[in-house]
Structures are given as structure tokens and as C-alpha cells.
Figure 1 (cartoon, rainbow, N blue to C red):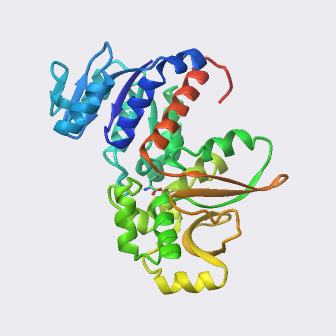
Figure 2: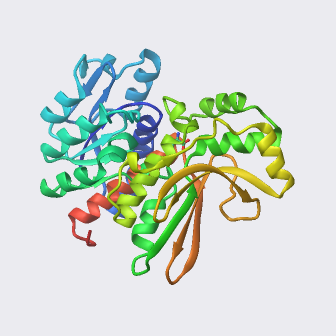
Length: 341
Ligand code: HSE
């Protein structure tokens, strides 16, 4: 299985490292033997149909800031679109940062890959929040798979859980903490009385925040995830403009402390029922949703099984890389028709 990686930051580097370390296990357990034939970053590309050495790629990227410096196989200035069109590959893994204004450049990467009959795995929320229904149709028309489990919950299989484990039950509503950065910030304000600015700096250092952290703070990242859940899980054809969004900017230490006195904590909650909204809400600290640090938690209110909550790490390089590997296995199994879908 030939892979092309678009974007080579924390997630991309974690991905090729895990693929290399787990090579034998992935072959033995899943018959999955991926070969990275191309990597693209903002300055250029590296291409090798025999497979790019993962450790050399990481070293060059970290030392010289671009994959194009790899001797013999580096191409300065080569664009992702050129690589997607011209390098023979089975799956394009799109990991460029989220842009919510127009979804670019991720949206064009995904569309080009689909038009060229490549399966797509993406961790980029922008294109999905703006155009998930049409991208799903485009993929189905071109008979390729589009997978994105890393976009919601990072390594925590929130989408897969709802799609596969809750089969046969009806999900009535969904409510959850969908953003690790704001949860980290609100937890630090609650437990250590840290200011929002200081806590955000820490979250950025730990690699949780978006390239543009206002996406986290203003609730946009949570709203993107809500849109993805709505389309993929609940068959609601909505986009980000249908979500009422309020971020945590106005939450003060005083608000947090007052909530604390009442046995509550302020959390940035995304909710999907007849409406879709994101806003800071006070919830009891004993509620299963009230998780701390960068954790995400989502409660599914189901018709027959009642409320089910899934909790786990919602951000981070190797966590998101783990979601990509899950998608790779899912595509492989789908192609082998080991299960429907
Ligand atoms: N910035 C996001 C978060 C990253 O904090 O949850 C994972 O989507």
C-alpha cells in the first residue's frame, strides 16, 4: 500500500515513526505493509517509489526544516497538487493545518486526490467542516474511501465508537468536550488559578493548540468537530455556519471560582440535538463529562442504552497518528470486503 503524506509536522512525523516501529506487527496482524512513497511540506517534496527512509526523513526535517533537503529524492518548490497528481500512490494522507475561511489548501488536496482515484485520510477539520456532504458524495462517485477519524477526539475513537459500536441503537443527542486546548486551559484556571494566557502558552508548548489558537479559544475547533459528528454519525447535513458558537474568551477566573464553589466546573461544551451549538457551560464535577487536562469526553444519549460516555486524549502527535493507522486498517479491510461500509 503506497502512501503520500501531505504535511510533515508533529502528526506526520509521529505517523512514519510508528509505522516503522510497528512494521512487523502491522504486517502480521492486519496484512498491512504501507510504504511512504512521497512526503510534501510547505517548501517542497521528497519522492521515492522504493519507499522513503522514515528516520532519515524525520532527521532532515528537524535539522533543515524541509523534507526537500533529502539528497537524491528532494524536490524544492514542488507542490502538493503536483505530487498528488503525478506520483503513483494508493492513499493520500492530508495533514495540513485547519483553515476555516475556505478550507484551503487541504480542500484542494483532498478533491485532487479523489479525482485522481486516491483514497484519502485526513486530520484536517477545515475541508470537512465546510464541505463534508459534498466530499462524501465525491468520494463515493469516484469509488474511493474518505476517512477522518483523527479529526474528532485525536486517538480516542469517538467517530468509530458511535458509527460501529452503537449500530442498531438510535443516537438522540450528543454532548461533549471536543477541544483539548480549552479543556487544558479551563482545568488550569480551575485547579491552579492560572490565567487564560499562561495556560494557553502551556497548551501550545505541549502541541495541543491549532496553528491558529483562536480556533481553539473561540470554539471554532469544537464546532468543526460537531459538524463532522453531525454528518458522519447523525446523518445531519449541516456545515459550520449552522452551529451557534461561543468560545471561552469571556470566561474569567472569577467565573471559574464561583462555579467551583457550587461544585461545578466550566467546560466548553459542544451539543447536538435539534440545534447545534458550542458554548461554555457549568457542569457538576461528578458528571462523567467533567474530565480534566487535555482530555475529551463525549456522551451519547441513545434510545435504548441510555447515556454512554467515551473519554480519552483528544490531541497530540502520536495519538492522532494512531487514528490515521486505524483509518489505514479500515480502508484495507473495506477493500478486502472484510466488512461492509
Ligand atoms: N487543537 C485541537 C484540540 C487539536 O486542542 O483539541 C486536536 O483536534
